[in-house]
Amino acid sequence: MRVTHYDRIASVFVMEELKPFEGWGQGSFCVWLSTGTCDCGLFQSLYFLCRHVLDTCATASVECGTYVHPVYM
Figure 1: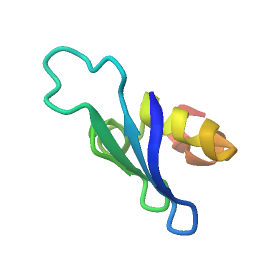
Figure 2: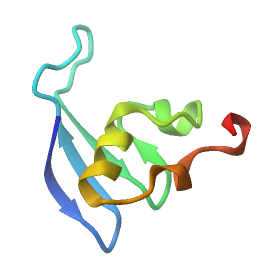
Figure 3: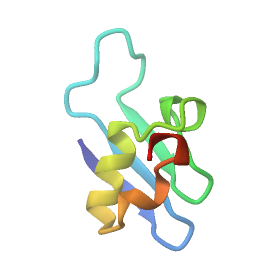
């Protein structure tokens, strides 16, 4: 995966999957760290850090632990 577009001030990142999962219709996902959402749906529905969020945090040098829901701690 790689970040193709980003707005650090708004905490919005667009991730492009180099090898998309079979069955997933899209190859890019938008991650909004400020609102805790991702186009894949895992981040907001299960409060689970999906791989798009993890990669976004790594790219932006942001501590991903900030976005871990208390239920997983």
